[in-house]
Image (tube, rainbow, N blue to C red; front, side, top):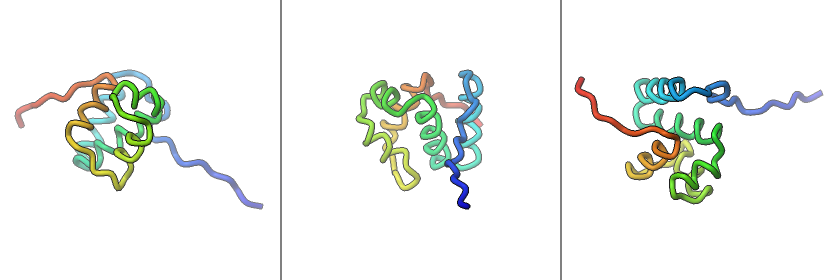
Length: 94
């Protein structure tokens, strides 16, 4: 008998903007830009890739490729996705 499994959804249960912001910050702090890109992918999937892509001004397939583990998104694209999810980038002193 084979047990069928589904991929783990990291963003499941994250509903508030505050939790989403903490999630993005934690992934960025722990894993750099690759972590941020991965976390953006998780949240985009949770929100809906089509909806996120439309809000970012991208097509869905392009968004999937951009946020894939081997994707190398441009800064502009990351900024668009962050805005599509309802956030903005800020600069902070160390």
